[in-house]
Length: 198
Image (cartoon, rainbow, N blue to C red; front, top):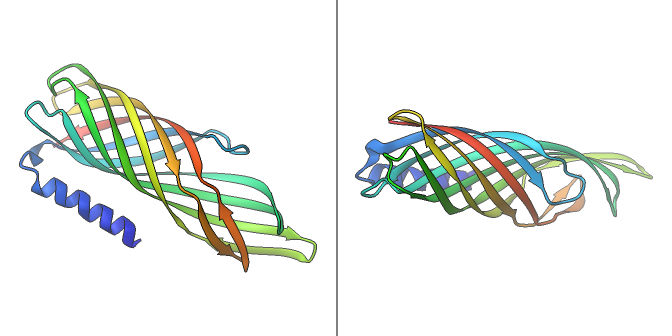
């Protein structure tokens, strides 16, 4: 929670200290996440981004975004067969460069993002000695790169859609007294959002 608080405070500082804060926005979004790891299917997720556009042509964008989804999987580990329910929430500080002025009806964008991902795990091991259940909520460093296109609907509303490559670092944790290794994971993320400028 301290990590999210620090990222949120950083984003708030950027918004408040930016002289063009009048071009702030909120962008609800939907995502379709396709993990590279075997056993994970494509899932829908949802989130929201809050940020600001700045620069002479409003070509620069900084935002703080949180989005999440859930998977239910079965895994075979050294401790036995595990039924796993995982809830992923990624919190990212994004930068976008928009190719074209804010007055353009259509413009492309691209940029990197850094942040953290919280993986809330509910796990039940089926062992020869019985069933053991536990929960953990580790954090992992996360980075991504994205590109997409934005469509200006009105003076204050914009629809955008894009692709993001997401990388989540590995982690180690203890669940029900047993070590659990969360491997580094990557995913292709396709998303769309509607931005409301204020």
